[in-house]
Image (cartoon, rainbow, N blue to C red; front, side):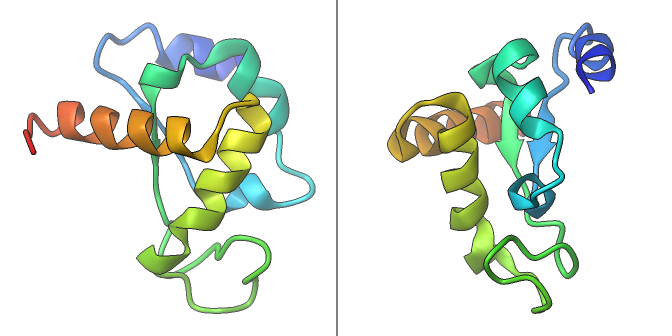
Length: 100
């Protein structure tokens, strides 16, 4: 929820992982993500092997499914898929102190 997100984001290097649950009909992410979470504080995750995103519910989740989560995050934020992909890749690289 918004309060928990705000509290967690007080930690300077903390990022929030967005997984397949964000694609579920009852997800609270559409209220929280645009209102509270800056684009530079999110990464994508698979929740593998569980929580496959819609439309793949019921299947064993793997990293090939992350594009569904990225599309949903872009839709929620009102930005392009490319914007989400660029931001989350850069955030993950920064989080793990990596360079391409």
